Length: 354
Ligand SMILES: *Cc1c(COP(=O)(O)O)cnc(C)c1O
Image (tube, rainbow, N blue to C red):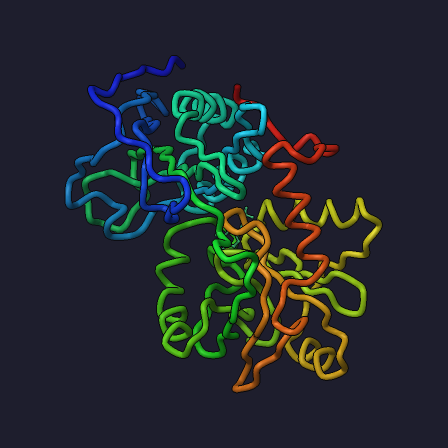
């Protein structure tokens, strides 16, 4: 399939790189394509970024048939542009799509489209340390019918935003609240799909956590509320007694690409990594025994997000004196280095765009 190019009449002014907000500034172009049963995915176009028109009865507004992805493009010191494991994102997008009864995209074609879009927009990729071009692919249902059903038509988009370093003031640890009332998902639900609905359902818990002074919610399993799952925008890793422990993927946790990469990285350094069920009681016991060395989140936006405090049932657990630990720092430096092309990539994770 050829990708049609519609040239913008005027280009926007590039933002000040020293003060980039997350997710509010969009580049000049976006990629779009349409699906209908007769033509399959068709009408692939790179066109000026801008509003779209949809019928108010479009399925997505009523029943949330939508999936999305998040990845980044980076500029290397010698001016090349590269992506980090983008094939993983399109594979996961198709797994999420399958769960939501959305027709699959051609992953190779989507990667080709992404490369073309990023190359056109390469001047938008910021170069200051820790900055990048955030990439948001998403698919949603567009059929005009408010009966509950699988939509027959869809739109696929890729939009881009230049983003600053997640850590404007250095890697400052986050304060999180372990949720005991609300649940993010349960076995058989959509927890392992990256879909907007999961986020809509978790906003109330995060609002409550914010009101109480916590930045994020750490979720327990929805069925028993006994085992640690994830943060809801990133996965979580504990360093306990010299070993790394992360909740295993049981179907209710989003299989993060950062999580997967960090596990590979740690193993390549000879570290022990356990993917297993981690009961909150075990964490409390290990914490009181002084065995919990570090805790950090893992996700594309922050890469590594140190967690300084975790509140559970009224008790604050404080890790590594509320400072980033040496393991989190080393992982962050290595992964960010590989992504920006300043550290060698022995895993073949990086995909060059231009
Ligand atoms: C996207 C996401 C993550 C992190 O995945 P990455 O591929 O590492 O960015 C973790 N949990 C949830 C719920 C997510 O949506």
